[in-house]
Amino acid sequence: MPAASPDTRLVAPSLALASCIRAIVLRNTLQRPPMAERDRLNHHPATPFCSIYWLFEGDARILEPVLDPSPVAAAGSAIFCGPQLQPTVSFNSGPVHFMTILFFPDAWHRLTGMDMNDQMNRLADVNEALHADWQDLSRQVLAASDDEARIALIEAFLEPRWRAARSGSGDGLMADWVNRLGAQAAAAGIGRSMRMVERRVREWAGRPLRTLRRMRRAEQSFLEARSDFLDGRVSLSDVAARGGYADQAHMSREAREITGISPSELLRRIREEESYWMYRIWS
Image 1 (cartoon, one colour):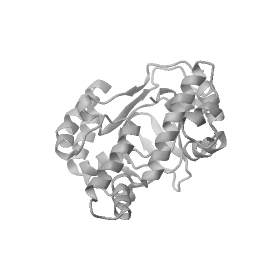
Image 2 (cartoon, rainbow, N blue to C red; image 1 turned 180 degrees about the horizontal axis):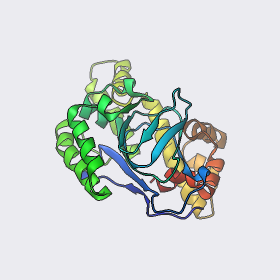
Image 3 (spheres, rainbow, N blue to C red; image 1 turned 30 degrees about the horizontal axis):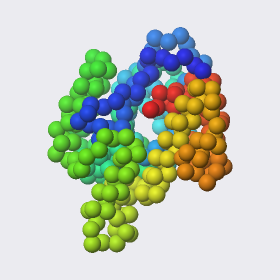
């Protein structure tokens, strides 16, 4: 397996933002020796989260899904990304330094008022997609001296806004988020039909609750399979049984929808290919 590197990190949010932010991702390859072209790819799964991506050094281009024209982000870019319905692959032409903050979509809806149905697969410049206060934050993040200062700016900006916007409670883990989302949608729709509840979930998260539950189960199964794999005792049939799948083939079908490849192939690539770094650091 490619060696774990301190230049690629998954940072947990502050406790006050745990039900708002899923994670902060930092990657800085500026000090690495020159990397082979295949190692400058970045593989990411389909995701229910939306995000802001700040690129401090280098460039990035989306390869999959194929877009026309293919957007290229340069140093100093800030991009809003909506939830992605399929796996994505991007490419860096050289060394890169970036940060991504991943938001639970219902939290993003509460913070911005955006209907998440309209944000699916969206990629847009922050200055076009977001209001002036978010644009000001983005400029400060891009101008900050280091990653720690950037995280401090983001948390100082978000904490008072999230206190004002949030309802309910939870620790922000995906399983708890999905369960909480269904309960809150049902509570908000008392006296109404289940169709109205489902409509509310779509507005908040952009996907049906059943799809979110499938993605939550797939994430948990992946984490278990990776842990077993690293311990040298992986049994995908056991992982499928623990996850409540009908069989291993059922788990594989759902994994392919999210990652584009089978669980066994994903584990192999995590072990052997640098470009699957996101799967290595995810927790």
